[in-house]
View 1 (cartoon, rainbow, N blue to C red):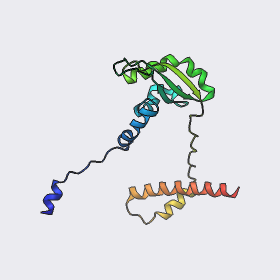
View 2 (cartoon, rainbow, N blue to C red):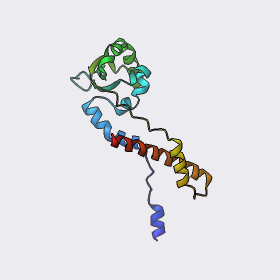
View 3 (tube, one colour):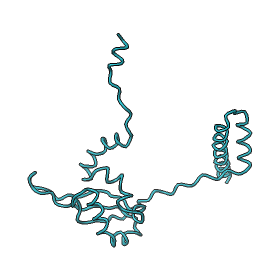
View 4 (spheres, one colour):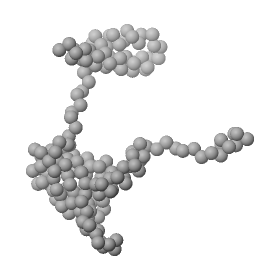
Length: 174
């Protein structure tokens, strides 16, 4: 009887974290910022290569409607921008507005307001390249592994860890 109940239960399928986050963030973004999280997620593609690195949409300010039957007027896109790039972004404002409207599929935005503030994340430092000594030490550690593919992958991982530890040890001695 237990097997029948277990088989009859509906199992939930795994969902991408982006879908779950979207359901949680969407109401808050819509209420506080007047936009959806899809705009944030697609911003790199919308803004294009030169602008995506130093801009980020903050909110869309919509015109207040007197009643629900009033037409939705285009809003103002508030765009955070690195201070030194604001003039360049202002120059390309018409193209950015056009891309945002194409994303929404209707004239959602007709103006752009730039707010100068830091946008770009701090550049992540690249991990140090393993030296020959790191590779040899890692190879000695995985010598007993019989599977050649696993052995190679563990050796690469170990060499990277040893290189990072070597860098941390040198930074601690300064």
